[in-house]
Length: 423
Image 1 (cartoon, rainbow, N blue to C red):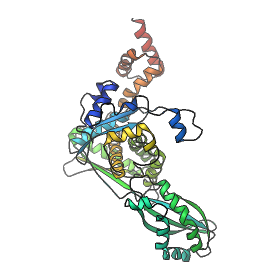
Image 2: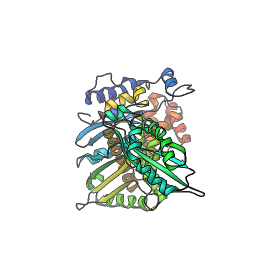
Image 3: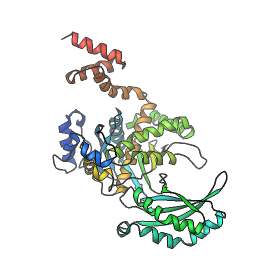
Image 4: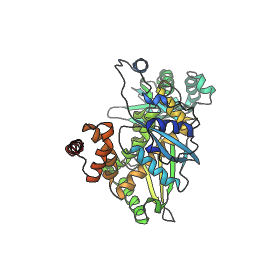
């Protein structure tokens, strides 16, 4: 964790100075983040990570400042190509900081695997036959990963469902496994494949699918923040923020964009730490479907008795500190060192805090000046570069685009031409 995440003037430093400052605040060696200079991944490492590798692709990694999570300051690594994401998260964290920052909690890190049994003639009776052998099946599953069991993890539950379809009813067994500090896909998949034949024998059917579910609804992280109404812009802004949330809660068209904004923050931390962005996105959007089957907001915004805004967010967080790219990728290791987290639960809680910060920033912007002003001001750097601006010209082109409130490619080229003509 950072000694102080409130780094005034951090954005005005050059890239090397930012790395040194972040490393110093987190108690790391001065060169601990230098791997971020090149992206840390060469073709040789890439070839070991995936098949048919032909190279690598770079994504900017930024550091979000101002975060206080459970009373501790944190600097947050975020990998994203979208302008305004890191700045927005940092700004919302600064507002939340007025009332103590983010409070987070989480469940135990339980992932589930499904075993599908087909061609069962008596599915309801088969369900009970499988449950009668619960202890046997759990013991067989845990024999596949004695290290996990030794670390305090292992199977915590076996449930069995019947799932009716058009022409038959499937028996579907769920293995719920505490995977400790792993994401857990490999562990639960191995267990599912090992127990599938015995479950099929008990159900008197044929085993088919044996794989984890990315609906990680037993592995939940939560974040809460109280936002001072004056720091948000006043009581009217606070009320309008709640109005904006209520539309997302009621309307799937708004909810899709509202939740995408949350994932702008979450996925950026997931990617920076070498975790699975697709698993996180799948679990989050499944979680956004309520009991009636309606897609709705992942977060909530309410006014408390003092007129301040209370923002909350709850998400599945299937992430880990061990295995996969988290251990293979040098940048992922550096990013984890920056956060100072020591468990997968802490990492999941940090991600949800960042997602909530991103959401706060977006809804506040929409309730005030609109999303484009801040976003396009930051996007102007990309526009200037695309127009052909050299490094020493970028800041002047950006200033002109922002002043003119015109961000088209043609306008940027015209601004650049005028700038060069004046030399």
